[in-house]
Length: 439
Image (tube, rainbow, N blue to C red):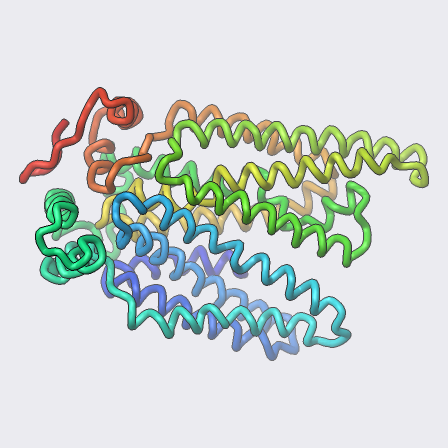
């Protein structure tokens, strides 16, 4: 029900973000998360717990519509990728403490073993509500609402170090005026047509769809069933499985944060195909070693090669490391930088809907696949990852080093992939004019 709530309330997040601002939407989502916790924590029946999960998913959906847009829209051009990449790495800021808390509460012999983790979910939501009134609103949201003076004040204070004549401030204002439509689809809550009815909109959504689907269905969804995977490769005890889960999260977080610091210099058309292909390689190694382990278990369960199990575990950890380096920062960056200011909230709502939908498939189809196929289920993702790498190679639009407004010009070209490659190689240079952009 968590994924259902997330899917249904993603469009609500788009409406709140476009109409009332990114801050209001984040605070509303955080308040809904707290409400979900209040419903779940005292549960004595499964129905109450399920309703709380639904409410929790609704709150998360609102937050993830507004938060990545906010982080990218307030960042100076040279920090844009890092700011949003590090934001998306915040997932580990929840998953690692959650793993540690669950590891500790596993030893509590009462209902508090699950109530404590549920209650602690509200901690960061309270922080968001407390800080939201004191952080500035997105300058691009302000510009889209016709509040140019407030947008300029933000840019002078935070991008120009208080200098009203800063060249960067004047350049950003000029770009925003040239690209932000004061009568865009953000003023019509029901209007999603420009995302699909124009060539540029379809190219933008192709990037959103690929990163949303591939970022959830590259084998990383197997993480929901780490205990099953660990058991398949010989790690049987609950404390040992929880310990390995914490270690896996810590290694993945290190890889993701490393990539996030490089996001502004890391070409998307290089890292996405290569990283996805390496994911297929390490999943294949894990499956191959798991097959050897399975054969050994069938012949003599008391005489299993420990090194084979360790090799399978190492390959699984390396897969998670490569996936985190490749996808975790860019899952936040690519959808935001692919969309214009006025279509950003709606596009992110669709992205959230897709991510939740794929999560639903992973959560409910994954156990069936693992039960029926065992380690062979992983081969599905090996083949799928190869397909993903091919798709990235032919259809990824290079956005590294471009401002959000420059990307608007790239996506309006007949072939955005070729245009982005020409700009990246220096064969074309985008120039801002009063009427828009040219090259």
